[in-house]
Image (cartoon, rainbow, N blue to C red; front, side):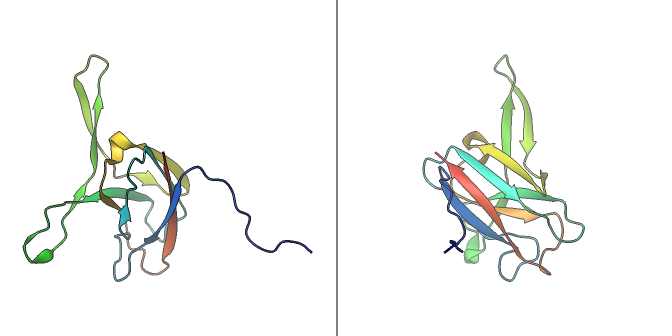
Amino acid sequence: MADTQTPVYPFNGIIRRARMPALGQTVNGEMIVIPRAAVTMTIHVVALVGVATTLALQSLNPDIAPGGAEVWDQVIFISEGTDGTVDTYVLIDAIPEEQVTVLYQSNFGAGIVRLVASADQSSAPIFIPIVFGF
């Protein structure tokens, strides 16, 4: 008898599936806790809804605002030049749909992040697979 279950592949990491959008949201994905010691974050972006073609990455500010309001900051990483000087500050705001993007720990840091779509995704929620490597 044939096995009717989904095959299991030996991914070398932790797989998270982040809902896009989060419940009650339109463009903000659900929170993703970055596992301790994660070295890479591989984001498998599926087709987005409507005119949205990219995602941005935001990090939850640990200093919660008065009244308990969450503050999310855009993730920016520093790209250093070959002579040790800072070349540019790179905003992670154009992760393309239907592609795989790999970020390194120096790009995403630690803590809690979320993906943010460039347009409303509430008409057809999806789950975006993210693999954290060690």
